[in-house]
Length: 115
Length: 115
Image (tube, rainbow over all chains, first blue to last red; front, side):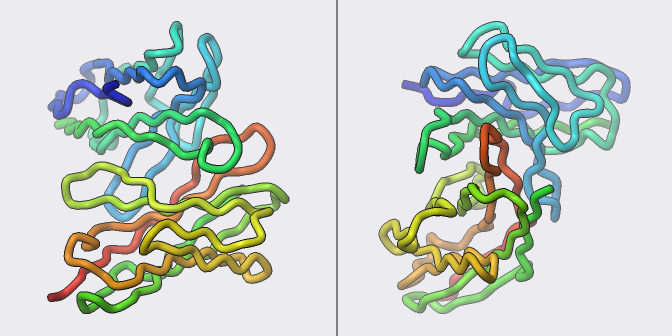
């Protein structure tokens, strides 16, 4: 049981390049989210999904695309990378039940640098 | 809109002493939940404790307890008997009511435990 996995762990991009951050979970959780963490800012929600085929925007969606074709996978696409997207990216899942069911299970993160 | 405020950028505590990390929140939802997460220097996000807005008792998980004062909109984390391994960044977060499972995070408090 791997939980939430993210690839790659580290990535360096040049401005204007595109790439996809991968997120996969084996817990059969309905809800998946992408957050970015910048120094002094805490975590901010980029996009989220409440099930396969359903996605919605979070607090900072500009410059990012998502899709959810399966329960297990929730990739985050950077269409044209900018230095402002230099950050640590976390994928998270939860079951959406009462109490601790709302707990978010976080992946290990992807550290992205855009030069 | 929801907002989480953590007013202590950094805190110091002596090993074996108790420490309180402050968190205040703002929401118009009647049903909501409050979380605390720990992020050590290795970067992973570790769930510590959860409090639902309708929970009558303050949440406790081992050495962690949440001092929930609903009228004051505060949800402070109390760590008893601090250990060196408690040195980390601590984030307070909130989920909204209804079908909103997205988390809003505070900016975090860096706790340093001194021997």
